[in-house]
Length: 274
Ligand SMILES: [Mg+2]
View 1 (tube, rainbow, N blue to C red):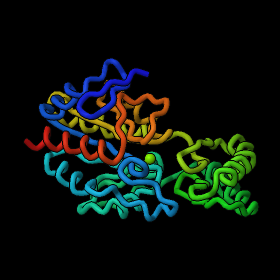
View 2 (view 1 turned 60 degrees about the vertical axis):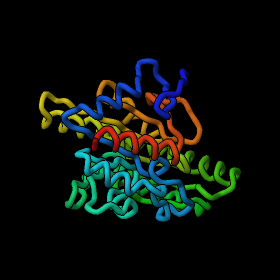
View 3 (view 1 turned 90 degrees about the horizontal axis):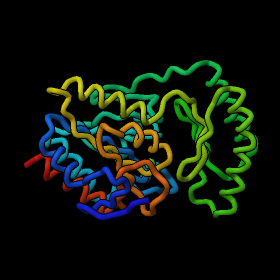
View 4 (view 1 turned 180 degrees about the vertical axis):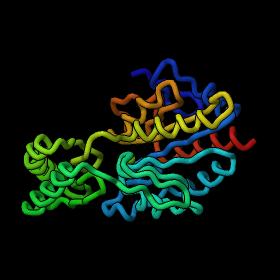
């Protein structure tokens, strides 16, 4: 993996030019900044409801909005939780539950209509896991079931996850569900939507409403589920991995939170508000 440094970001793909990208941000007719929440804007916490943005993030996002950037959050959490934790007023657009929910500014999140069979599959998986009474924390989301093991010691976490994986694999097959790991747990999801879909929808709307479709866009994320979004950005804007340690990724560049994240946001502010 190529790694060079330019404008504070570590470039991972030879065709990505940070300086060129920032001048796009300055000159474009419209700007869209798409952001994952956990691990990207906020550090992980054992209690996910304690995961508040890094100091300085809120103020910068507010300034970015003043520079006529459309701000869009894209998270695996329910949209309502992201809104509450982010604490921005007015609330920006939030896509929740990996693209299953969309909450436009000032509106309630869209309803999640799942096929009946997949809903039954999630119910059954929740019962199987609760019956096991493992030490993990089970969370039912609108279109997924997540088992969190953050805060457990490594051995217990591994045992808990492998137990859940054995119990959920046959259910996933039977009910057409998808098993995916995330940073801090395992998730059984209804397939068909992902963060990539959210990115494609938002950017095609933005291009449609901008003169000559001239849109500068970036997506920032940390987790495996952000890889769908990174791939969706190809040819549409910059995909930035935000993470303490580098891993295999389809992102264009890599930054470490919080310092390099804040610098990226400052660069965006400078280019878009001057
Ligand atoms: Mg994340």
